[in-house]
Length: 435
Image (cartoon, rainbow, N blue to C red; front, side, top):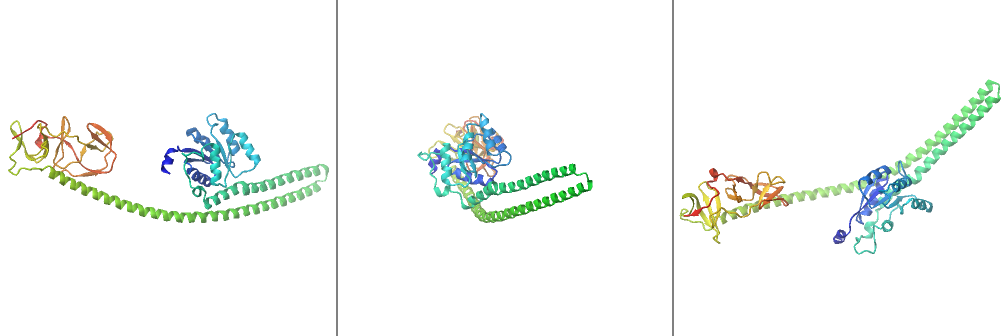
């Protein structure tokens, strides 16, 4: 699976839908095909997003606040920079007439909101984002691609409210309003006609009063019908909300258990990190002891009868000679140690310097024992103080052979490396000889 994923280039899809649940279900299914999903809740948000980022396909809902799916297709296809992006309608709307209408405007087809893995894969094949016959495609388990029962329920409820319940309620309210308007106009005309025909003001007033009472009763009846319909709608919404809340509470309980398990894993991980740090500090201590012993190889026991001289002045006592004879270790009168090669020069072995900035310009640190004299470069010596303490941190950069590099690694134990001060170390950067 890992090798195949690395061969398939990731695609990007924009899902335009005012339902966050529908977006999350489709986004999860697209992830199985190495397609990353982005979200927009309206046409205006989608246009703004597409001006900043390119996508490979747009999944577009029909019923949205503001501009609906049909208007959004027209606006996208009218833009020269966006008209080439394939559009797949993602809606609960169905029927041959609707399919012909969106295809005529430039859409590829319609993907129903009652999703199945087969329908998603068929849509991706139409858009040419998936080739079932290619060897380089990702192998996806069929069961894992299917939406869960909970996801199907949420999408169905939102689609039902959006495409079935809300339109019917709106039509009933609109019909009652139209009836009331029509009756008001009709009886108003009748009253005007009666006023024109009847010369007796009292009779006209009585008729007007009667018509007014009728209109008042008609309005009250219409308002009661509207309140009854609204009450039924509110009760239905409450029932649906209770169902969703129960579903969410069940999911939150599982999520809390998952968080608790993750916390325990994190605690174990932290304990493991502390143990590893203690082991590294112990290893560094052992390496220091080993280096200290290596510096004293073949140490003379005759009161340091061999000495390093500079202009007939004793600079240091020889405390050991490397088995290969290349290096001589010595201790200065100030108790600092150094390595001198066979030419009488202080060691010029490559030295790694570590820094707490990105440009190798701050105070240098070195992995070394206290009280050592080291060569920083061909013209400069450095030393670690006798009483210097170990610092443990993760450097930002390191310098090797005068080349500054970014540091990649874990925390290390280091000491500050100071520029050589002959008054402190008793050593200058010169050639020495043995006596």
